[in-house]
Image (cartoon, rainbow, N blue to C red):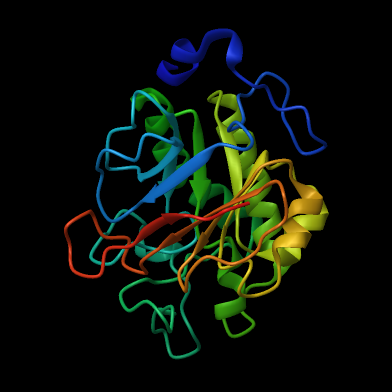
Length: 250
């Protein structure tokens, strides 16, 4: 992978309890940027860049590929209708905070396998494009399912995604879902949102050697091996109204 080739012997391999031997985890203590709203040149001190799967990876920094694994992207129809979660009336279950994002149905083993068949192709493409890691979002979607899904459904799906990522040579992040941090499912690091605001950073830090945290309300105190940045909620590019990026002190 391109970043691995650039850093050569400086590459850190996963060695923690959740790590997969031979998979390159993000380096600890390195600044990062969360660029889901559009790719741009990051600050010089940034060594890790997260971008959407539709964007090219940053060739000069450790690249993490974002995939919306447990919900749909607004206006996107990549997940077949039969794999979306429906309520008792037959309506799609929508994320109440993000209009146009519909929950994926991972309630049975057969559906989980089918979902991973779709999402797995995105993960394969991340690897082919030169990413070193993948961040599957909305792991915690069961909390927005009105009881149709549960924590075990999410964990079982996560294990399948982890296996797919590792088979592609990618590290894989636990995204939010603090309830799962202590289950040691096989994730290699964590990406969190507002873990300081929700007093969750210590739980992630106890489970992972590398935790990348995005704080939307401003920088806050985080544990030593949690790397935090302040970003605007829309994750806009520099020059856009409301754009915010600040590397938070450790």
